[in-house]
Image (tube, rainbow, N blue to C red; front, side, top):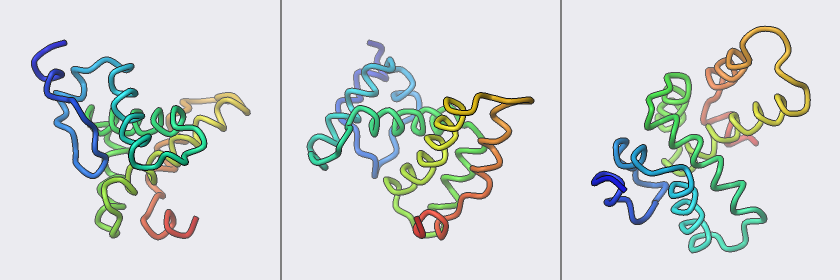
Length: 130
């Protein structure tokens, strides 16, 4: 584990992890940190592994600076969502996109175009109305 990764002992979705420290972890370490948080904070989650996986995807996108996810995340934060809820909002778009890809296939063109459109349409109001 490199020096940045050694500083990541806990995950708190309300506090942005330092991108370099987050990205220095391998995927299993990221997933374990998020699972441990949710096991403590919400032991009633029906599928903590799936929930944590979506968190990890969003945190990865934010740490890597993926523009559509970063813009959507910042937009819903400005719309009043806390950091954890903003992760859930962006994650809901990512999860829906993945579900459609699995059930319907990619179709013609770049499948990321549909994800980018959905992220561009995400607002705090839309998320809160779900």
